[in-house]
Length: 391
Image (cartoon, rainbow, N blue to C red; front, side, top):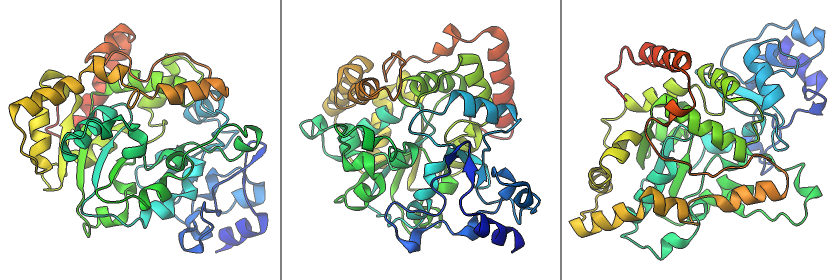
């Protein structure tokens, strides 16, 4: 308890010169969901005075904070190249040291204790694995081809659970009074809790950070996991992070972060494999991006069967056309162009680009050299050596 007591005397730790947020304050100020001081187990990762640094960490499972003055190359790249106005720092959580923004700690308890419903439909993935594509497919199927309803922006009808933990606008909004955020952006957890059934929920959280009712099996929502080969995922995630999440570095440095498990929701392979090994559970469907590209009608039929819907061939063809890359890219309900424009308008990010770029399998060959491809291939082989999963 000596280390914990030292922390209590010190108050909040510091990351850089800015106060560390998201340690004990909850968005709804509910004591029930606060991250308790006893959960801050790895004090060696905090930027604290020397007296506190001498305290041995009581365990390895608590949040591990990324210090601003770290000599570790991965930490240094994060601090130098990936600290936009809506990020205050990063933390690693859980047994796989999942990297998330500090603001996640404000919501971790609420997500853990979230009331899940058996009627929910969840789309889970590592970022840039075909999530939006899969969301739209599942929503249209389960809503009995309500294309009029599909004109509502996807984040409103199929909200992103971890959106608010990913983007901390607290210090930005007072200076931008004209920037009005809907509830599914400003408090995505509350928005989802208040939705009527059936709810459609997107998340990039790995298995071990999903609500405990899912992990413990007390609730059995339909979960569709979509995976994509690591090289294409990395390239797509790089462009995404430039236009939406404020990454300012080179592609080579981004690949270092990807391979090192130092991007939000990483490490990559534990994320994928924890769902792959659960693929035979009746409420989980494991899909691959490459299969959607190869035979979209077949994946539509498979998904419909999983959701308990019987489709005729006319419906399959109609949905396949709706889900074509050209249609998706030009569809304002799903292409996130409005979000990109808001980032540009308020200087939250500065890079140009589109949320949907090429949609091709093997696009990595245009930007990765032979040595980098070989490094990714070795990394993939090492992680899939004991698995039947292939890409």
